Amino acid sequence: MTKNSSIDYSNRVPLEGVDDLFHRRWSPRAFDAKPVPQRDLEVIFEAARWSPSCFNEQPWRFLTSTASSRDRFLDLLLEGNQAWAKTAPVLGFITAEKLFARNGKPNDHAEFDAGAAWMALTLQARMRGLHTHGMAGIHRDRIYEDFGIDRQTTQLICAFALGYIGNPEILPEKYLANEKPSPRKPLADIWRPIS
Ligand SMILES: Cc1cc2nc3c(=O)[nH]c(=O)nc-3n(C[C@H](O)[C@H](O)[C@H](O)COP(=O)(O)O)c2cc1C
Image 1 (spheres, rainbow, N blue to C red):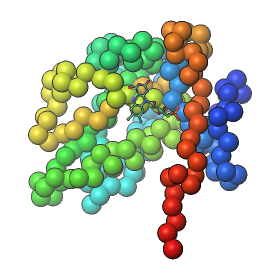
Image 2 (image 1 turned 60 degrees about the horizontal axis):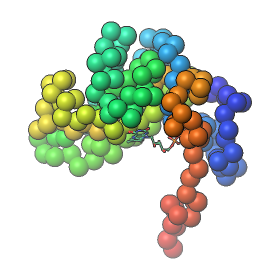
Image 3 (image 1 turned 30 degrees about the vertical axis):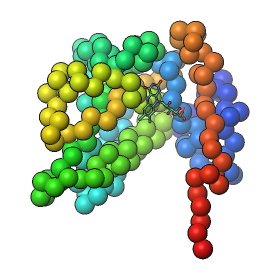
Image 4 (image 1 turned 60 degrees about the vertical axis):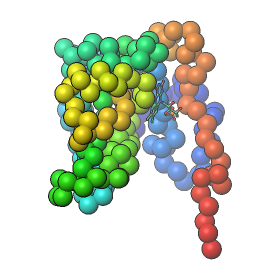
């Protein structure tokens, strides 16, 4: 994993032993427009493919932009996200298949599994010097329509940006103060061993 020494990691003091991969993953808003090589994209989404899922259903689906469709994807983000995501070389949407292929019954864990796949691709991206940034702020109805996504069978989850970290100075002023890795709740707030 490449480390960028100009990034302020002071909010992140992990327990010794946790691999850098986890706490040096963060979601920048300043993306460099530099294109991501096709091979890196293939490896990143291949990593997602190996994620665990309920009954090995693999319900995750990723729609990603190419150079020619990036503006179409950008237009489907809420304006607050467009303001920074406009420089990201790759934009995408994550969906999950809501029904089990085996029996047509609802898969209540499809979104959980898609989240696991998202984290896998995010960490693989990080290992190749790239960052991701998830986005809930999207024009949901328009995305279902524009990509012909069937609401009966498919859940639109969120959007994401993928690319190399850029110079924060390209950001609109209001995003500057938060352009650094964020802190976390204490471990005791999220983990309760019960004896
Ligand atoms: C599902 C999801 C939706 C998010 N939506 C947005 C969003 O619409 N706009 C945004 O700027 N950041 C968004 N984020 C980024 C989070 O705010 C960010 O992950 C969180 O503050 C933790 O920071 P870190 O990822 O840098 O560690 C989203 C993240 C996730 C996982």
